[in-house]
Length: 229
Figure (spheres, one colour):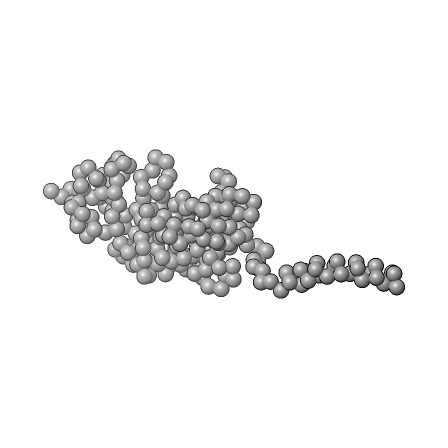
């Protein structure tokens, strides 16, 4: 009888632990696929780069397969549609939890994490991939960075869609099959605008450059075409 009492006493101490284990097994846990890393976006650098907090600390992330116009590159003027691309990514990602998928190379030579950025861990729709979304909305171009090309075909399809719909930066394209959108460069000091074929297009001081989406926008802002009086 004494041995039974001892066993019952020991078992009674285990009951709370067993109940806790059973309760934990019933709680809904977030199941993230093994090839995805959950992070929270803290700060957007520009359209295709952001800083995030991950499981092992703070990281800088560069999206794979896309290229947005430069807005923060040293000694480089703010490029056409750069501010719009940066604003779009800030609106879509800042403070959000996203899921990173790497490809053949985990980091570039700047030690940035190279990643496909998923908005939903289920990955059910093309739009769940932010790399696809930013290209499809016309804020970035599809650009392969071998050997990291796992989803490049999908990103190329997104660019075809953006060009067809004249979305974002493609809205100023004069010809539907044009390889690039028209980037109209204005001079803040002279209030003259230049098209890419103009001789003085690349002679404007970076600090004086202002970009326009169309000729109509430039002229509505009071700018006149280079060579016209």
